[in-house]
Amino acid sequence: MAEALTELEKLQKAAKLIEEMSQGRLQVCPSVVGQVYIRPQNEAYLGLAMRIDSIPGQPHYRVTFSAQLRRMGADMASEGLRTLLSEVGQTYALLTALESRNYTPTTEDLTAFREDLLAEQEAKSFPTLNQMI
Image (cartoon, rainbow, N blue to C red):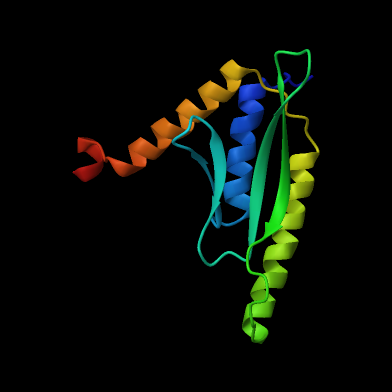
């Protein structure tokens, strides 16, 4: 029998899934106000929102995901429409995969998740001596 994942592990897996299934168009990032958000690349037609709501009477939060259109009223040639359709299919599959799990982290889980993302971001921004050689 497989071990149950912790809430932190579920969030970490969700972040990797978002980046992989969107082919890098969406990236889970730490915000400057102590939260986490999903940043779309400029050319992305769709975005993904990560909503964190408190659960009344519990020390947990409910995390949900939703897709957002980013380019309303944009003119498109056939290539742009093909790209949009591809993104819609990928985002549908991603959202379906994310919705298959319940995410109910504690404040500590959310803090650890953000700190992990921050450490990852800093490691990418500041290469170590071994990476430069």
